[in-house]
Every structure is written in structure tokens, then in C-alpha cells.
Length: 198
Image 1: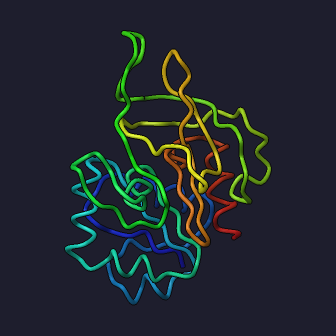
Image 2: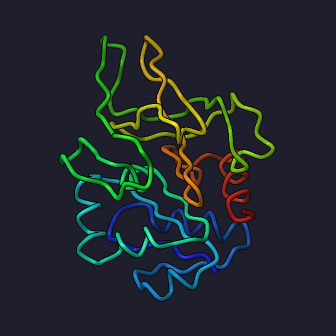
């Protein structure tokens, strides 16, 4: 059973629908016992990262997540919550990944924020990307990003100057993507299937 953590943020059910398409059993839960008993845990999210982190702490889920030893996947705001700090709300994150989340700074009128749409990922360095060679397009919706760090396992680029940032992170049993695999077609389905096979 896969536990999708419920902390009153957006995009929870679209992740569940993607899991169902893969034939996986999943439950939406904020119960620590159910989260610990799951084979895999997903922390999805859309919205304000600082508020999302506050909700995790209010429910005592921050310590639950830190204690997990089975595979965990953060998605979008879920990834940002797992970082050391986010500029969105000036909030301390859970500190799983040694990265800070910053807001994109457009350098020209052509640089649009929020970033919305399809973009390629590259420099893939994890079993999460088995069967994916790099250069494939995935779907992003975000105004904030994690800088490059030792935990970076995939990159993408922003703006006319092509600034590189972390599209995915990994530390021990924790994985995260800034993009939305549940909205990224066949490539995203492969990434989710790879995660479930970890």
C-alpha cells in the first residue's frame, strides 16, 4: 500500500489517479501509523510552500516523515518542503535535502514566472530515471526552485540565460521532483513506476 500524505494541499487526488492507472493500491492519509506501515510514501503538493510546511508541523507529520526508512517521493511543493529552507514564506523546511529554495528572478521580459509548461530534464543520476535517457520533457508549474547541490539527480533550465536548477533530488531513501510526474504523460508514468519498484 502506498500512502499519499494528506496535509490539505492541492494535487493530492491527481497523484492518486496516476497511481491507480499503474494498478497500485494507495490511500490518502495523515495517520502516522498508516504512513509508517506503507511500502512507499508520496508527499505531493501545489500551493504556498511555507503554509504547507506549517500544516505538516501542526499535524506532527514533519517528525513522522523524517523518521521514514522506506522510499519517499516529494512532488513540487512536497519537494520544497523537504529542503532546508524556502524563501516562500521564509520558512525552515524539514531539512532532508541540503538545498535552499529561492524565487526565480527574470532577467528579461521573455522570462515568465511562474514557470508553467513542458521542459526537458537532463543529467539524470538515479534509478528513479531507469529507462529515461535525458532530454525528455516533463510538466512544471512553479515560481520557486532548489539550487544545484550534492543531492541533485536531475536538472532543468530557466529563462533566456538558461540558468540550471534542480529538477529532482535524492538523499538516502528520499526522492523528490520539482516537476509533476502525474501530469507528465508516459515519461511521468515511468518515473512513478520506477519509484514504486524501489
